Image (cartoon, rainbow, N blue to C red; front, side, top):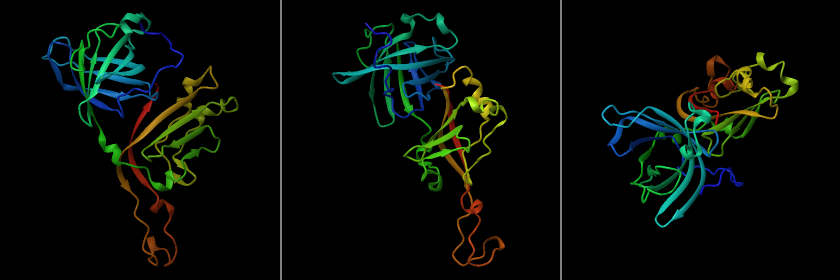
Length: 277
């Protein structure tokens, strides 16, 4: 039996640090190309699974599923999880029998995890991670962002605010990601549609700008809700020139004077952004 809405709530999904690409087998052959993908959501207890259809494998289809991780445990050599799979296009038409599934999984290597999914809302029919109604082989993807960091002159201050405090950037301790929060204030409601973050915080270049009015659109009716974006540094495109040697004359300035901040503290980066669940 699976308890609905447990008091402890959902748990952090055990498949560490997505995104992943994956191949899968539903008993009719392995679907390898085109690749399928698992992406992280804003909530660490949810994942977005994008299944791709393989033209030469029966039973495969283009399908998007949302996975909510509800409980995990270990039994013998394997790890288990109860999760709830939902298809957004079906909405309330899915029954609990359709949604609840049991997962058994193991790490095959540092970058690969194998997962088997039960055929129904039980933990029967999955004796190992290689046997189930659907077997997935997850492989870590987009590892380039692990080598990309935001500049120290930004991350030395973890928390940044717009002047009206309606928008906030919180940088992680790893310096590789930030959360962008938009808070709705009753006193700011009339201003928000016309306001936008221009890309400068305290004189430094900020992450990509977002229209506050657009982000606030989903907050109407609940003034305590927050709209969040998660930005992960993917790659560094270019950086401004380094500070000139002491005594040099940068850009025609007199020897001994400092180079403008915009020449020394400016970067152009590609950032992977996640919003919603």
